[in-house]
Length: 309
Ligand code: ADP
Ligand code: MG
Image (cartoon, rainbow, N blue to C red; front, top):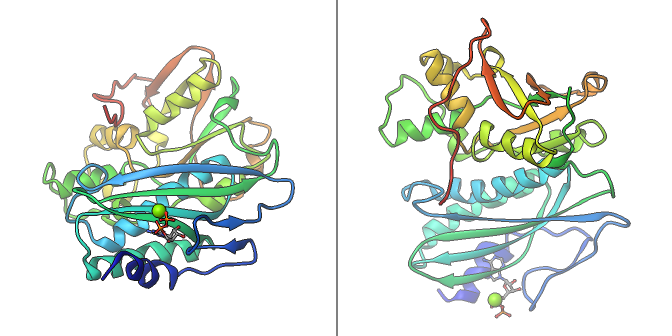
């Protein structure tokens, strides 16, 4: 199978276009019509085999997750996702792999109603997947990292630490009676929650590198403010609740790949939030993050978050 047949079979034939797409896959560039008077939100993320997912991950999960992590970035901006492009580097053409990869990719694309409008296919030593995503948001409506105010309440969606726990079990660093591998392989980008937070949240970020690391970005970019977190309020799945408390906290605070949203809201507006989420702390003047338990005792995590370099 040559490159063009591959693109046609696994990407062009499965793509669905609405009227915003004037030219999708097939020409030298895609042509799209941006929504009137909206800003475009653009983000790119690369997944490399062995770095961002174990080499033996199911191809379906790789396709799903590659788009999920990009959708999560737009969710954290409060943007409506619209289109994406895919740059794929493959060591070999494996049709079985491509079929499953594209199945996972288009499953999540269809769920969020977004279209694959182009890409690039190359041969290379390592499997690598880059997705560029484009969305739209009204001017002044985007959720930024920089808007947190002293006194804001800090919230997170979903539960924390599950992907990190699943990875530790997968890598045999831990044993567990039950652990939810789907939280690692099929993360849920909080697109609808992000859209609902426009006009409500003062700041937002998606948790890809761990709560402490990502909340740290909000604090830094909001003018060096700080935060207190209530450990006993961290939302933990039933799987994490089976661990020793401090170990569960450690996962919830510092393991990556959860793709939940962390956002801050002024106390006057928090009643406007109309989806499930958990209040875990507040923004304060004193810089740094203090994690305290029920008895006000400080907990010092052993590491803070994932770093690539
Ligand atoms: P060019 O040589 O002009 O860059 P290509 O041969 O790379 O064109 O690609 C042909 C068409 O197929 C283009 O429209 C491109 O966007 C699309 N395409 C290539 N690879 C992919 C892919 N992995 N996913 C989606 N579209 C792709
Ligand atoms: Mg090309």
